[in-house]
Image (cartoon, rainbow over all chains, first blue to last red; front, side, top):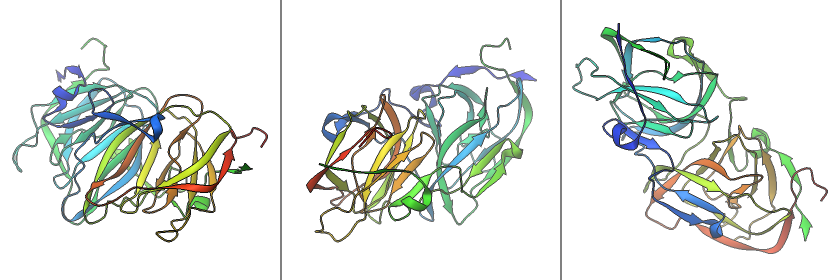
Length: 168
Length: 168
């Protein structure tokens, strides 16, 4: 299987796929008489005209590495954001939305720090949650509503995702 | 000043004010081939007809205790959720919405664990963020849009909030 290179997650590199939820680079200002700093409006949350925004917690089991990447999924009707709740790093694999019938690709893999969340734009292909070292909780902000909002696609060719820093 | 007693935060005790964001007691089911457990739809996120849901990070400075509680605020047009990002406990002071012109009260204070978020319902009086021991980040899910969405009210009588466990 081909190895999938892993890059550090940055807002710029992730821009084709959505937003990084983090303080760095965000517009911010003091509130509450200076006792709190607000890093404001970090993501385009989108539940579409027929949906509502819901909040859930995803508890991810740590994966075994190297991890074969054999499928991707996407939510055409709404965004989906993940924010780590225990400061644990995790891995993100994405591909641009493409056409409705397109095969997901090319794939991009990112290592997210424990203080970085991600928000996948509507239709952005992504791999299900990849926790690394321990059971990890994430706050998830996504959509509930009518309509078909989950596509799953097998990959014609599997990729191998190494533990970051491990030899490929 | 009168002391404000602090209770442990539970979904039941907090129900008049909104929801507790936590795994315990939530409906949950496995996803992603059993690698993740989804604790589903934990709060009533409400941005109203003229608003959109936004996500921000609030970075709270630790307060000094005992803390005088001299004012409250409310957001009549939308909900506001706080989820701790570093597992740090914090304090919540709330009062029921009451009438538009009503004085906030009676006050209720809760100690939230670091794995518990809170979602204030529209119009629920609450004190600005009260971090306790260290600088603490919270993911905040609230509303952006037209209309007046923040009332602040001084309290006719201040209350004193002790550090939980400290003698009142």
